Image (cartoon, rainbow, N blue to C red):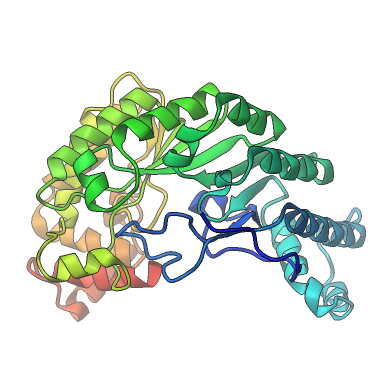
Length: 387
């Protein structure tokens, strides 16, 4: 674990990522980077050093946002929006060291409605529980109207925490934890250096649920490659059935050049699944989800089928139908959808029936020279801008 950084406060700061569903949240940085940082599939934080921000620095960030929020609220009053002339005046009157907080507060107020806060970076719960509680209490003091405070965490970290500490953190205001389960297969978890096992994932997930905190588990279709696709689906479904998380979120594997897994892929030691094989894998997994009440979300452009989502068990058959509909399409129609989805023209399978969207995609399809042999390579190139 990295050490706490120096006592020199350098102003409000934010980390590089957050979950897609936290796009409207206030991003508050508690730690910098990732204390594990060895996962072979992850491009984030590579080459960086982990450190913990001092609690008083985090509280200063909270106070900086509070100050800017109050400025904007005073400007708005009963109006619907701030006149542009007032925004320009506010910017001119803001010192350079306060500008980052000003921008962040503006986004949070007028995009997010000040409803949620996300604690960064990769594993905020690695800091002392008492320090997390202190930060949460200060947040609730400054922004009592906030409905949701969330954070990423590693299963390994949560599994080692005392139940009482996790319950105290929940009572202080943290009401959702995002965990990268990725896979329930111990073979795959070891292969990609996740630093966890299936048992640890299950133990941590159950502990979060016991503490009364919402749990969002991320799984990564395709992570086992062709060789371990079936095991990935079966073991991941079993882990999820044991945990029963509030949310199951899909993040299909992509392999950018700056991750260790790319070398294995390039040298032929990892054989990546095609889009078709990934959908088959998701079908196999979904068929095995039993006795749970999770909401399944495919809320990222890396996923092929955005309309594969719903509540279990009531939406399971409809979700399975989405997968089977795609798999039963004739091959050229599948390729059209693959290209249209990666160009952000298509979202759901039904978009293929939209003449305008179909025409745009067909033109791109011809221009790119898409064939059955090159479709995965071409769509992978299109995806690089989203990684």
